[in-house]
Length: 281
Image (cartoon, rainbow, N blue to C red; front, side, top):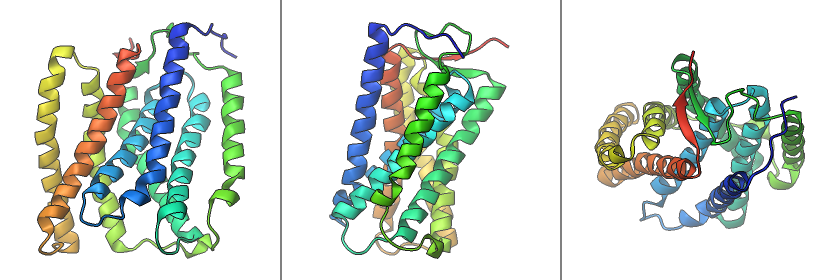
């Protein structure tokens, strides 16, 4: 068991801000189906970008935070379950039409796939370059978390999973089906996310005078990635029709939004004393 560190005013502030961010994201997830009611808007790209950004932030903490991975694992799974549940609750409250257990399970599979693949480049970067996301109280011993945190995380995760029958709709999860179109879109989004996540995280902790040029350059970078992504989908699935420009712009909004949300949240954490460092070998 690691040492129990004193809770300072800075620590309380960090925890309060992080808890507030989680609540904001959960509220957005609940409102996602309501935003989709206007089919002529670009809400799909914006809200999907926010959801992907949530998965990236969870993956960042799971892969790059300090402490033993066994301490972080139940907490990252708990956050992933909360994202899943909040989206399901939002769909059940606001979406029109039926929504059964197989569709909820499919949504869970998509989210799990996203958060797993988002972690891959971060784990590689953490191992190869020894990158770590640390707070101002980090002492370098790697034991910011103790057994109490592990047991608390496991208890809350078990409690969340145990309430699944209340949140999940009725139906049969064995009827889950993923068509070719969904696989193609998911693959394209995962690819773009892989080449976006690591540079975006690094950029949020770059020197202050680099932030504005990096932000402007990122808009161009996202445009190039979107062109590649959209071209791949058109080659595999065929062109989307006469509204292809709107569809392409929706994908661009998705990529820019996920970058902007991750960038903004990490800048906020940076202001609270978090640092992105390369630990000595």
